[in-house]
Length: 215
Image 1 (cartoon, rainbow, N blue to C red):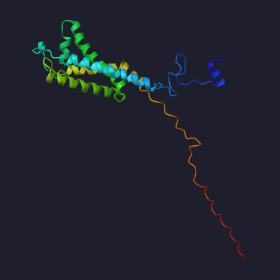
Image 2 (image 1 turned 60 degrees about the vertical axis):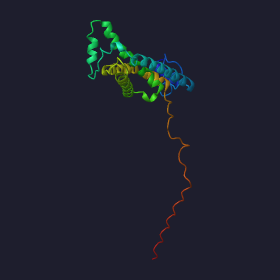
Image 3 (image 1 turned 30 degrees about the vertical axis):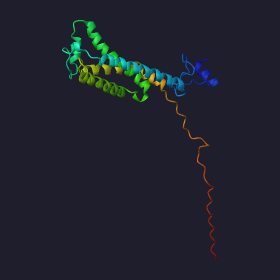
């Protein structure tokens, strides 16, 4: 007997997420991920926040540490692509990969952790604005207060690109898994929910029969 015929005969119905290879209970009735219990969700947010703090400390140590030896070699760059071309023109490929790849990796934790810590930051444009704003403030602090550091717009572009790559690869999935929305109940009107009339409508008075004309 064909499979579809047996389903019709015995009344079987395949529900979303109940096919072969799907773990039971992995998805809700509407096909989306099932919300995590509150303790697990809080633990995931706490771990992401801890990693974010550690990353911020590492970022401050790497970018805000004075470098007096390179004071004569640095220069402010406000033209996009200028420093990037200088990185790629280096004779050693390892140096170019270290400069470009290091700036990209430096921004990836923003795209991975920020949507988990704060679900309102989830979204391509929101991650772009958040990372761009943070990196701009870091570059401004470098150029204004740190000896041997300068503002470089290409560093902001590379860091922001890294955050977007991290968000598209894993950050969006992590945020949806931790902050999954509960399925909405089926809002069909039931018989109990119908408004009841306050009182019975009074019947209209019947029209009196017309009297026959007397002859």
